[in-house]
Length: 74
Image (cartoon, rainbow, N blue to C red; front, side):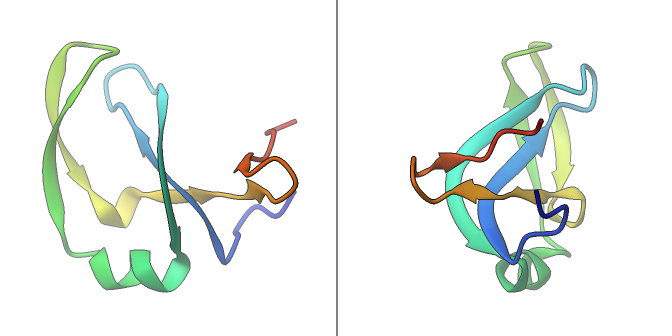
């Protein structure tokens, strides 16, 4: 699997638990680059807390083209 895909689904990570949340929002590295200075407060269901999320910390998960879903991480 490509560790740094050019496009994929936008992934958020809970700072408290480390749990990964798939937003199912497709974007590119260029999209993320354009948002890197943006910040957003999000309430995470894993820890029931609100965190300041920095888009500069976001990552993309490659998409399995055949299944139209995030590629397995194994």
